[in-house]
Structures are given as structure tokens and as C-alpha cells.
Image (cartoon, rainbow over all chains, first blue to last red):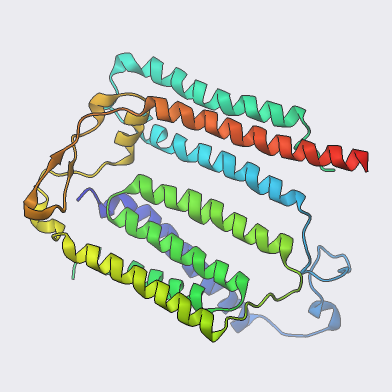
Length: 129
Length: 196
């Protein structure tokens, strides 16, 4: 098995801290916080402004384009991950003569998306209309 | 029980409970949250198997991407504050039948293959992501000659060393096509608004 538990110890520690905080923070507030309920405190918090309308509403369909753009760069990131894992390793994984080629391959990979990004930018996809 | 086995049982339980939660709950936002936990713990099982690139793919594409689309879909289309999906008895029966059918197919396949512990030679290694990365970048010498296991009688099919540089660059062109497509759709929408 290639699974070394030791590699994941930082992840486990992080999970323990996150879950512990998520439980401890509301619990501590529940135990030690003073309770004086006033109508203002019962209002939904909206950065000090009086809330207008319902919080649950239909969102603009423009947000869906943002979601699709996010997905494109998300998948882009996915293919940078194995490269990032490769790049920092020493040894015979990638021959040293090959390093420069690899650098330019990644530049070409990124450049194709940059071209699309500039196209979308020029077409006004990022403008909020 | 080893720590490895304990982790597997924890993750498998979380996956199973979350998957049942997705099917049982009638609130679509709760179903999405259950799905999030089911997909994330499936990624955990992939990590446990040593397939870290597959686990990362699961996290980025499914937990990150598909969940975003589900939640955005709910946000954009929900007509009321609480969307409940009423499921009739007939729908329950049909989906139960389909689910059992799929489960029996998986169970039959699982019974056909031999347990891998008898087959895997001690020097057998799975592909960690750094080897996949090297293969994606065209360094075919780094790809270990992994063998297909789980066949009857302990047969091995040797795999030749390959590199995936061309698919890798095709992917980036594919992403370019998607972005330009999104940009084109946004532009077409604006033009229609101008006319109107």
C-alpha cells in the first residue's frame, strides 16, 4: 500500500482543530454568555442596517455564469496539482535535462486559458449588467 | 483492528449514512448538504486506498464543482423559501428496485474478483500523483509498470510505459473552448437585450 498515515497527520490535526472549534465556540457562548433579549437583538444581522425583505429569494441568473467560470478554473487547478506534486520532488522522476521543457509545457497549458480569459474579458463577461 | 481499518469503517459509515440522508430527506438544500458529506468521505476512502490524485479530483470536481452547481441551481430556481420534494409511493418503489438492481450488479462483480491481498506482490505500488504528474508532462520513464490485479487465477497484464502530454495539452484547449463558449453565451444574451 502506498498509503502512509504519517503524511496525513497535519490534515488530521487540522480536522480536529476545525471540528473542536465548531463545537467549542457555540458551546462556550451558550454556557457563559449573558442573555438579555431585546427586539433589536432578535433582528437578523445585516451589518447594522435594517434588513429589507426576505433573506431567501431568487438570485440573478448572472451568478450561474460566475459558477461556470469558477468550474473552468477549478478543473484547471486540478491539472496543476499533479505537476505541483512532481515539481518539488528530487530524483529521477523527471530528468534534469527535461526540466526546462516541463516549464514551457506548463506555460503553454496556462497560456491557452489566459487567451480564453482575455477573450471573455474583451467580450464583457465580467461586466455586471 | 488497525488504524487503517478503523479509518475505513468510519469513512464508510459516514458515506453510507450521508447517502441514505440524500435519498430520505425531502428538503433539497439538506439533500445537497448530505451529498456534500457523502462525496467528501468517498474522497477520504480514495486517499485511504493511496489514490491521492483520484481523491483530489473527487474533492475538486465533485465536492467543489458539482456541489456549487447544485447549490447555485437551487438559489436561482427556488420559488419559495422551503422547497420540498414530495415523493410518492410508486416513485419509492421504482427507485428502490433500481437501487437494488445496481447493488446486485456491484455485489456480483465484487464476488467475481479475488480479494487483492492474495494477488498483490509486495513491491506493488499504486500511482501516486507525482508519477501521474510526470506522465502528464511527457516523462514516460517515470510511469511505473503497474499491473492489473484482481483477475482470476492471479493473472497479471503488464502495462507499458506511457506518457500523456498530448491529452494534457488537449485538456487546456478544451478549457479554452468552455470559456469561449461561456463568453459567447453571455454576449448573445446582451445582444438580445439590446434589440429589446
